[in-house]
Length: 189
Image 1: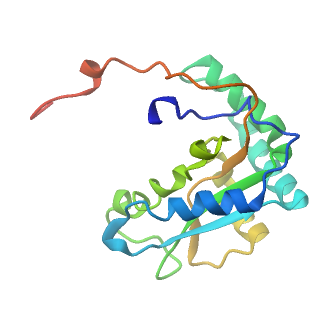
Image 2 (image 1 turned 45 degrees about the horizontal axis):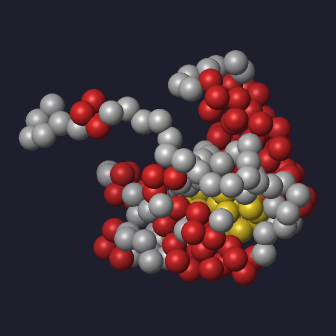
Image 3 (image 1 turned 90 degrees about the vertical axis):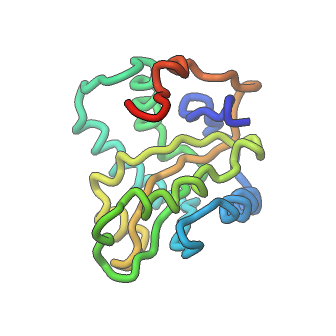
C-alpha cells in the first residue's frame, strides 16, 4: 500500500462529494497510529463548509503567490502544487490535523517528538478508502488567520492541511525515489 500512496493534487475529483461518514472512518483508523507516551494530543478539524473552504483556500493561495516562481525539486510537483493552489476551494473536504498543547506556547525542546506524534496518524487511512490526499503546510504562513477562521483556542496548533477527495482515474504506481544505497548508511555516516 505505501509504495503507491502518493500526494494527489491533479487527480482529486472536485465534483464528487465525500461522505463525512467515510472521513470519520478514516480518522477512526488514524487514531490507532503510534504517538509519544500515548498522550494523544491530536485533534482534527474536518472542513466541509464551502465558505470556510474558500477562506482557507484564499490563505493558501496568498502564501503560494508570495512564493512567486520559486521552483525547487521536481517541476511536475511544482506545477501540481500550483494546480492545487488554484483549485483548493473546490476540494470537498479539508482535514486539518492539530495538536492540543498544555499551554499556548509550543513545548520547548524536542519538536520532532511533539510533531512525530501527529504525523503517523495524519495518513488518514484515506488510501484504503480510495480517497486521495496531499500533505500541505503552506497555509501555515497565515496560521493565526486560519486559527481564527476555524475558532481554534490558543492551545491548539495546526500541523497541516490535507485536501481530501475521491480520485479520478485508476490506480497508482510507485513514485521515483533515490536508490536505497544513496540514502542509507550503516553504523555511521
